[in-house]
Image (cartoon, rainbow, N blue to C red; front, side, top):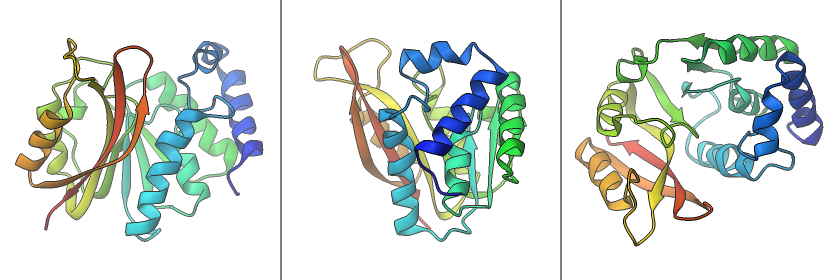
Length: 212
């Protein structure tokens, strides 16, 4: 199944039927299935382009904080099959697994506890955390340290985070600080996309590749 407007609309219709409350998120502009979707291009297209350039389709990937699994569906439709998702929002996990069944995609989303992000177990080549680290008071250094233990050599951690402009802002990270944290843990750091936010911040999409 090739990704395009038709499948986006099919997924959108399914999610709204399962839970009409999703409409508020779609209309608010930050749901991935806002059609056409600026966020879909930022998260999904740009991550896929990186994976296609550097990794085979058989690469193992965990999408943490996957929600209803839209990104997993996107990857599967592009030939990535060794993928799975986890999320602490059990309602979205339930809906996401129904969505995979509806699409006929053999992809599993697992429900986890809220603190599992600091105690992830398993090994993958790629771990993604998209559109999540900016919105809760996460301990970012602890997440980076724990996630490293779950990534195979030459694998990578892909995530986005809100960052400050030149004028410092409360609760926002600086690019320098993020790079320092990642470098300290043995990553080679690259920003593959930037998305300006309204007001005082922007999002950077990082690829942190673990040196062998």
